[in-house]
Length: 120
Image (tube, rainbow, N blue to C red):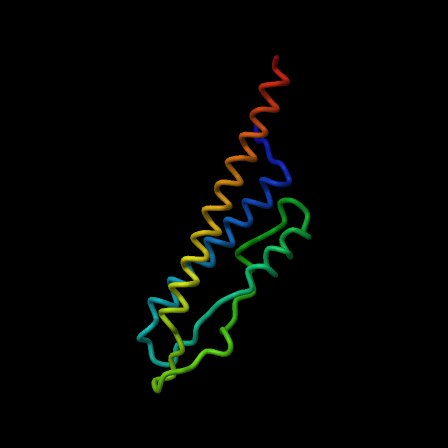
């Protein structure tokens, strides 16, 4: 039997988006020395809000709207990856992920408490 609450579904998508953000940040860091490479990113808050407005089960993190990050200074080789920015982005995303995991643990603990109280 699978138990899914609306909160668990939202948190699951939140964790998926956090994972996508970490992958994108890692990709930017890996391309720090690639000539003409442009930093990629996406609006985490907008993507999460879009997912919350979709019916449960229809949110798909594989369809995020990634784009070149505007406003970054390019080096002479055309690359605009800033390791400082990416390190900050990675730290922020790690905190988001840890928060999401903790909230999901609490949600499942709440569900298990409800199941236990019903069985008494």
